[in-house]
Structure formats: C-alpha cells, structure tokens
Amino acid sequence: MKSLEEFSGLPIEFDPETFELRSTKRDWSLPEPALKMLDELRPVLRDPDCKGPDIVYWMYRDISLAKHAGLKDETGLRYDISVFRGDMLGTEFFKTAGHYHPYISDLDWKYNLSWPEVYEVLYGECIYVLQKVDDIYSDRFYGKVDDFIIVHAKPGQKVVMPPNYGHVTINARPGKPLVMSNWVCNWFKSYYDPVAAARGFGWWLVTEGKGKNKKSGWMPNPNYKQPLPDIREAKTLTCEALGLCEGAPMYPIAAAKPEKFEWVCKPQNYLEAMWASLELR
Image 1 (cartoon, rainbow, N blue to C red):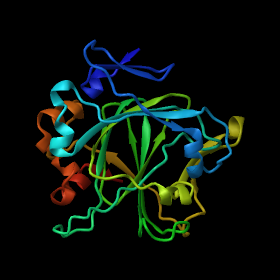
Image 2 (cartoon, rainbow, N blue to C red):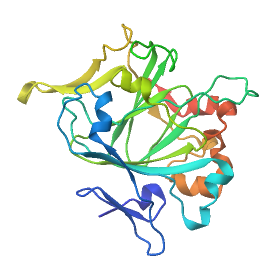
Image 3 (spheres, rainbow, N blue to C red):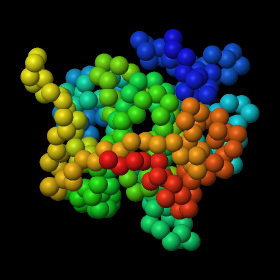
C-alpha cells in the first residue's frame, strides 16, 4: 500500500496492484465509489470495439472528514478522488470520458461563464486536456474547436480547468495507475453528449507501429471541423490567490478556509487569477 496523505492531506492509502483506495483511520471511511465501465467509455474512443477490462475507473465522490461534513451544503464545494487504470484503449492512451460544464444561469452575472474545476495529482502522472469549442450545444458532430491546451502534471501539482473549457484526463504512463482529486461546485451536472457524439476531443493521443517503429503522438479527430487549432502546451503554476500553494494539499486548505476556494463556485471575480495559474508556452 502507498500512503497518499502527503499529497491529499487525508489519511488514505492506495494499492497500485488492486486499485484499492482505503482509509487508514478506524473511525473514518471513504464513500463507496461509482464505477465507470468500459462499455460506457466506448462512445468517446477512437476504436469503440477495443478490448479492455470491464471496470476502467473508480470515482469516490463527496469525501470529507467528519468535522467537515457540512462543507458541501454550506459552500457548494465538493471534494472527489478518482482512481484510473493505465491500460491502452486500442491505440489510444487511457483517458476519461471528458465533459463540459454548463453555463452559469445567474442572470445577475455579466459574463457567459461555465463553472471551473481544479485537479490535483495524488499518484502517477497525467495530461490534462482543455478544449474550447464555439458552442457546446451546437452541431453535435462537427463542432468547431477554438482552442486546445495540454498540461502535464505529477504528484502534488494542481491544475485549474478554466471556465468555458471542457476537459479530459489522459494517463501519461501506460500500464501504471493514476489517482487524482478535485474540488468542484456541486450546483450543476456535467455535460457529456457532445464529447461522445464526436468520439472524444479534437486530438487523440495514440501509439502506433511496433518495435523500433513504435511512436506516440497526437492524431486529429476527423469528427470536428478541420483544420483543428495547433496544440498549445501549458505549465501549471502555484497561485496563492486561488488557495493553490506548492507543497500544500488542497483538501486541508479548502476545508479550513473555504473562502480561498470561493472561485470554484463563483468564478466571475477570479478569471485573471485562474489564467495566471497556467503558463502558456
């Protein structure tokens, strides 16, 4: 078992062989995980008929210590942890289903914004993919991609998903599991339909060839209007204005001072800080 307390701030451990996540405290336990099955993931895959394990990831939603049990109801902030396999999905690197967040409907706001989210890697390495399209509710099969950003992240690093960008998580280490946490607002449901309709985001990360000729790279998804925008890379930065501090897990900070994560549910006053947490190359 591998302790995840250093990066999560919670008394939890993880078994990379069995994918088991469990509490190390006798008087506290994790919620039962929701399961994502391979058959549910097939619509977003380049090869929907690929072989793989039945269960592809585990989602532990609404985690809190007993003393923080009222945090979600009081602030809207919800903390989750997800465990992912590292199996290749046909020629594609392992990835999540991907989704968009709906636009915030508060008519008092001056901006057409969707809710943001923030992730933190607890074990393994990943690539976060951020995609902006012209309209998440427009033509399902040939939406126009306006921007495509990738962010590499390792344990302890936090990455903000800014408003109006959908996101997918890719496991960057085939054959190795990935564990990550997130803070998200509990006031909405994510929107998956346009991603499934287009079989994923605008670019697929694939491996092709055999032996010495085996190569990995990004392949354009033809189910979007072409040409696609160039892939932009970004580096994640610490941002104290958002409560994202180097060497400090997100959970204890948000639980002790939820006002530091107010931006997750009320992003309109934090747009500059959110983009300051990403250094575009």
